[in-house]
Length: 169
Ligand code: NI
Image 1 (cartoon, protein in one colour):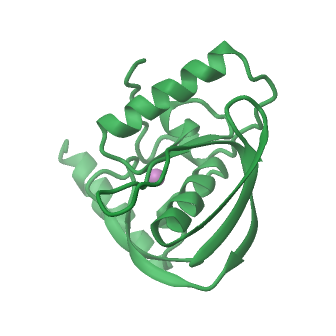
Image 2 (image 1 turned 180 degrees about the vertical axis):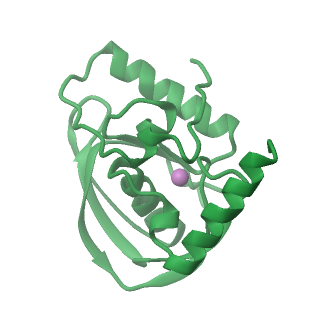
């Protein structure tokens, strides 16, 4: 397994919609293993394949904690089937280092997709799992959390990012 480089804003690949996986071959298995390794090494709770430069519909999520043992999730070609309720929480992203903001999400979500071998699976989650599923599926659709906040906050983010980039940070 290898730790891959995580693409950060404003890398163009983060804005592109990813392509469905059609081959469940060795290359896919390696990509999944590398994504898991990369997510853990960055202390993230989820990662989408385009964040490591692969524009494919693959995501990994691990929202387990001391309090809740939730198994590692690998989802291929995920689609949201249903959403329920609403919640607002602070959210961050490995592709937006050092930035967090409050994002409104559905409280519960049901997602259908395939496992790493290509077998159909369905995942239902609330709270942090629901948030992570929506966040990572957004990535696969070319959306970042800054696309989910108000225009003024987004402009503020962009301005701050430009300033930091100009200062070489
Ligand atoms: Ni993210």
